[in-house]
Length: 259
Image 1 (tube, one colour):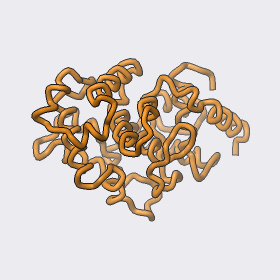
Image 2 (image 1 turned 180 degrees about the vertical axis):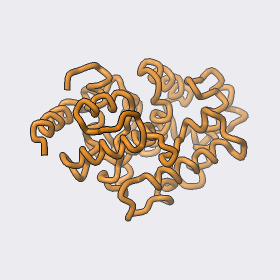
Image 3 (image 1 turned 90 degrees about the horizontal axis):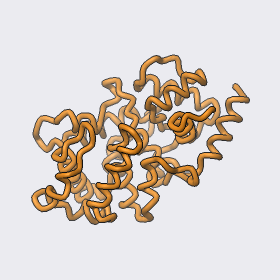
């Protein structure tokens, strides 16, 4: 084990606590105390977590304002005819206002049928699975079908929930799972049925850059394979909770800090 690297990782993990949360989409989840509000804010905050930070926070600010800062109530009462107009001005890069409206309609169905996203996810969860790759694949494809609602999925809808078996690093769904499964000052631990050891690190360009520099991956391009490789290397430093280092690594990269 590289003890020097472990010391640095542990130092940064402790430093990047909730006092360092901004700017991050995770900020929006910390506005709530209710389970369902946190979970819905979590899936929305993760789905829109691409592009520059200012753009992400701007879009999420609009969406939470449309929901009147009551995510669960808004989703449970969502009516596509009545509420579509409220989302007409909300667009985000690849997502059209229509894509976003369909996402809310799908969430309405999920919460009425399953009670929460967790119970839908657990339908596909296998305890013997080493990682969550299969579970994520089934879950993402199910969500894509629900949001598309019988139509051919648009580019935006396909981008919402990528499939790890198609090579995607699935950064945003792994981010959502980190928030839901882990429990500390930052993450919520609402999905306690899933061990933190099965999580895969959410890899974006910032995480990839730092992890290449730290020799935690030999992969050149951001992919599921890179995410798995980095996670396995981090298990040397914490086999039970390797993804705990994600927030620190990401924000060191985002803020241009020295590791």
